[in-house]
Image 1 (cartoon, rainbow, N blue to C red):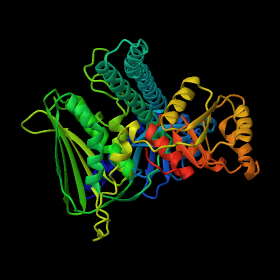
Image 2: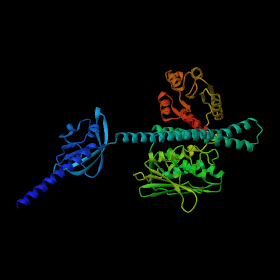
Image 3: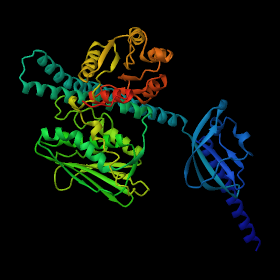
Image 4: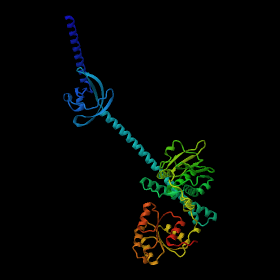
Length: 528
């Protein structure tokens, strides 16, 4: 029995020696490790720290022992932790925790590897990639800007070429009546095209600056659609393109800006006409689906390239922007459409027709939540703007016989044009090129109405009207005044009206519109 006890004692001593030797070897191994090694007990207290931890934590191993570990213990997973190293500098360590035993008790072994330099290199690499991407985007934007400016120059010069060419031919006085008519139609068409290009650029500027606003009222969509079609019918006829219309009348109203809604339809129809070949067909449909209207514009053109579809509403983007492109334009019309539709609380989508060639654009607008009046007059399309947008004939202008009109414009060509328009209406025109000359003529000749440009030399049109309004009534201080100017923003209109003008009319102006404005302000309602 004694021998057995002695043998068991020897075995236990041998196990203790082996365990101690194994622990010493373990200590030796982890002490030489380049990674920081911490032994943490079940209470989260550090029981051992190897020398490598000093470079991580900025404290000796002896000072670490007995302190709280301070990091979440997640067994079996590798995590990243931020630590304060030597000199108070932040470092990043990669930590992995495994279950262990220390001095006969359950513990955790935390291995920490300093990855600060690796993270810094990764960050520098990411910064470099971002910088390269930003540089690439800047180069793309620069190329896009150059392409846009080249396109803009081309699109503005193209109608100017027709205008200048036919103007010179008209000046020769050698044209037949038929050619004279063709020249006038061509000049008018190209001038309108150029005005539209400028309007599109101004609209994009207002969109970017957040200054584009809507003048909302109940609008009947069929009237708006018919007005848009009327403005583009001659362009469709010239290329033998048939515009087919399918409208749901009396289905309800939308709350919107009639002018901007017509602009949406006009832009979509213009786009469809541009891509539709001669003899083709453009279709516009209006239908009500529950609480929304759907306006669908489709054509029989080549359709939209699938790769370009995601960018079809992006400003300044065109499927083909090369000098050999087949279709013109600035790439602004559809971008304006999307913004205006969204301002109306709607959506617009682009796609291709199924089974046949052609593009299709679908607009969804919310139906106005009111019942339409039963009054027959109230059922007239409130958005029907064709009369305002269609060029009026000079022989239908109001007669201004007996009216004395003071015209102020420093541009000789513009001044001459105004004189010609008003004299054809029977008015007596007094024309001057400066504010000072106009003010003197106003007091001497007592005209019935003042029509002035804003951008005058030395003293602009705002200063002129302020001086006019400071005069006594008997000295023409209350004369009706029209600001006829190329400054066409909403804030320009407000400034003109605040300065004292009765009406703000942007250039280019229709002769009919100018004559009607003058007749209205002077109470001169007799027709020719």
